[in-house]
Length: 294
Image 1 (cartoon, rainbow, N blue to C red):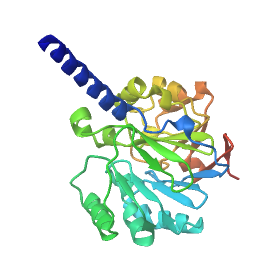
Image 2 (tube, rainbow, N blue to C red):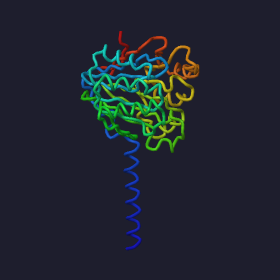
Image 3 (cartoon, helix red, strand yellow):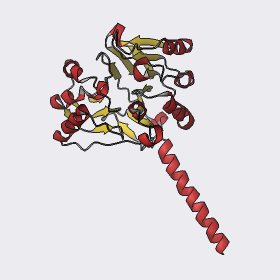
Image 4 (cartoon, rainbow, N blue to C red):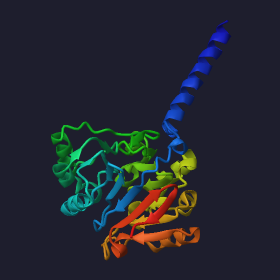
């Protein structure tokens, strides 16, 4: 009886562990169950110079991922206003680097925002404190999503699924803020897109190991402005995007994007857009097809 009791306890422990692992690594709603509602979804990769800002619009719903540098704030606000955005269902800051969060301060001042999602790690910088103050002034309690958590694209039926980096990312990956970047898969209008922040090859390897089936996407926002510290050949093959967008400023002091990233994308047959060359890039997703807006 005692052995049977011990066996039961062991089985219970394994069952609990399995449930926890499934919650950590699998989305609460599988992306292939997301219906194509017939509503067109538009992704705007806004030209903010050396930084990132992506606006996703579907029907009356809109979500902004990152907002460029603080100096780009006015440009982001103007872009959203010109495209008819009155409020935002969510703002997502992938990680606390200034070229991703700086412009969001102006966004909070200009628009009503319903919800905010942040990476689980912070930086002790003036711009990050300004961002937190702006969020607080809006009366919003920010959320810190984990792997497998989902974020709705408003009422459109579209959904973002968090693929990385997981809780306590500083403990897992160290003090490089790029590794703390939220990586998000969007499923909407029968298509998919991957937003990678400034993630790194180390995090990519973990996604390949833990969420491989969720990496294959139509559209890729190339990580870290085309740096070779990300976009490994194995990762790009897993994503196999039809379209890839690299956001950067021409003549930037980092020498980005790196040529190796183009050499890894080209054999896959990916059509590559660069904000430094093409300006803001707008892709449309509808009825399972991705197109380039005219």
